[in-house]
Length: 90
Image (cartoon, rainbow, N blue to C red; front, side, top):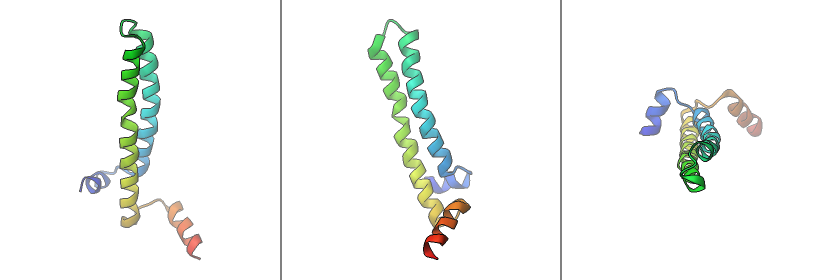
C-alpha cells in the first residue's frame, strides 16, 4: 500500500537507490564535519552522527528493492530492463 502510493506519486526505484548512495556520502560528511566542528564531543560524538545518518542507507535500499519489485509487476520498469528480458527469452 505504501509502495503503491509512492509509485503513484512518481517515486521510482532509481530515486530510492540514489537517496541511499547520497545518505552514505552524507554519513561520511557528517562524521568529518562533526569531528572538526565539535571538538567538545570528540570522536565519540562524530561516530554517533555518522552512524545515525548511515542508518538511512539500508532503509532507502530496501525501499528501492520494494519499488523495483512493484515496477516489475506493474510493467513500468525502464525500457532497457524489458529489452534485456526480451533478449533473454528470445
